Length: 306
Image (cartoon, rainbow, N blue to C red; front, side, top):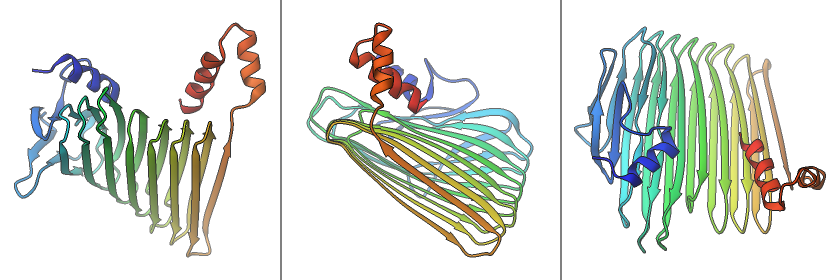
């Protein structure tokens, strides 16, 4: 039975108002809170460690899998290992993410290690959202690690979002691309107060004709700190583009460390980074339309992170 807090967290991280249709696995406070499978998508518990195995049959089309995690217990330290087998030619959407509600004095932490095997010609869209709330003094900590092996002609779209309220996060993303494999990453991150966020994205383009695009947008407010590290490696005739844009406010700190490594004469790699403050002309224009300073700032930031 889902409580009102559970449903609020699910809405924030997965757009759910109740138990989803189709295949799903809901994890609450380190335990299974609900599961369903479909004809083409199987979800089974691991037998050697905490976590699940998600198997999508070859050729599966227009189906989705929801695997949200909610934490409402203060002092919980949860760790899971999830493995995804995406069959040849499949086309599915996977909605993950974690929401923490901490009203206590002890830290609540969830670490998720997700390993994907995306077989030849398959396509997945993977959405992972993180959110924290609660009036306790205990920390809300999220550390996701995503590892993807993308076979020939397969496509992966990653949408990695931190909405708000996460005190500390370390996000590691590692991707290996085979021949003509395609990767598109969209990262959106918001920090405030004394929150800290570290994001490491490493992409190894081993295959001929592989391509990768990363768009990272972030807003740092208060005294928060953001640290981004990008590593784009081209080992064959391939194309890669990383764009990192950040808005910095108040006493925040933003660090962006790019590295692009061309190890083949036909590897075409580009990195762009920009860090700046809100434009005063934009603020004045919105204020002239009747918005307060705070409303003007929120409007600009919402559009930037959209």
